[in-house]
Structures are given as structure tokens and as C-alpha cells.
Image 1: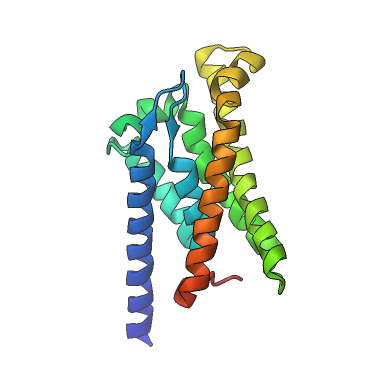
Image 2 (image 1 turned 90 degrees about the vertical axis):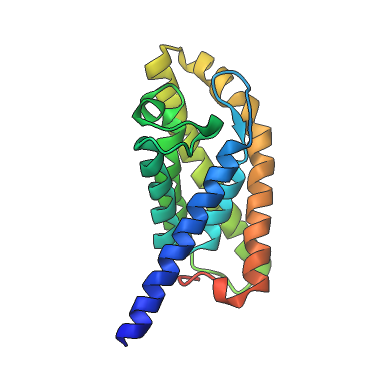
Length: 191
């Protein structure tokens, strides 16, 4: 029994480390578009939130944010530090954690249906809940820190990304769904 628990914890830590590495790589793929850069983070975060059990997914996203806040260069542009989290775009980073929690709650509240199509809809709802929370947090902090009006913050920090992020969410959900179908060991514990 003890050996199984130790193995399960080791597996969980390994998955979290892998998820943090994937999120970091997604953040490093950066194209500057005004105050908020375009990255592949959204795609990877949707993938992680949907692929791993809720506790591991939230722990991975929180671990990523904590590492970045401590100065490890895991954020976009290979940046790190508390100044990045407290800066104009830091709300999006904080929103990642709150969004992961929201997605986990959606998945927990909406039990996996027997229909594959409805199961996919459930995953998209969770992923877009994640994105919406991230947007709201990022928008609020962009307004507060940069002193922008609500409309200016929306136009600079959210509007240019809506279509691109929707595409990244579709890709992330599709990858997570396909991988879970191909590898039964990766199926969510709470499905």
C-alpha cells in the first residue's frame, strides 16, 4: 500500500513537472502585439487543464506562476520575477490559476456524459471558462496598473487575441481529447 502511494505521488510530481515545462515552452513562443504578447500558452494551458486530473492541473498552473514570480524565466520573453506578475500583463498570469480552478470546477460539476459529442462540449466549456477568467483578471490589472480606460484596456489587451485564443483553445482541447482517447492511462480520474 505504501509503495503504491509513493509511486502515485512520484507520478503526480512528474506530470506536474512536465506540465510546467510545457507551459513554459508555450510562453517562450512569443510574438509581440502591443502590451500583451501572443504566445502558445493558452493552447498549452487548455491542454494541461483538460488532460490532467483537477488537482494536478491546478497544482501545475500554480507551480508555473510561483516559479515565475520567484524569478525563474518561465514567462513570455523568457522573463520572470514578481514585477512581471504585478505589472500590466500580470493579471493574465494570475488569471491562469483562477481559470484553471474554474475549469476544474466546471469539469467536476458537469460529470462526463456517455455521449462523446457532449463530452467534447463539456471540455470546450471548461476551456473557455478558463480563458474568460484569464481575460477578466488580465483586463482588470491592465486597467489598474497601466491606468487605461476599460475600453482602451480591452482593445489593447483582449480584442486582438480573441480569435487567436479561440483557435488555440480548439487546438488544445482537441490535443487533450485525442491523447486521452489514445492513452487510457491519461483519462481524467474524475471523469
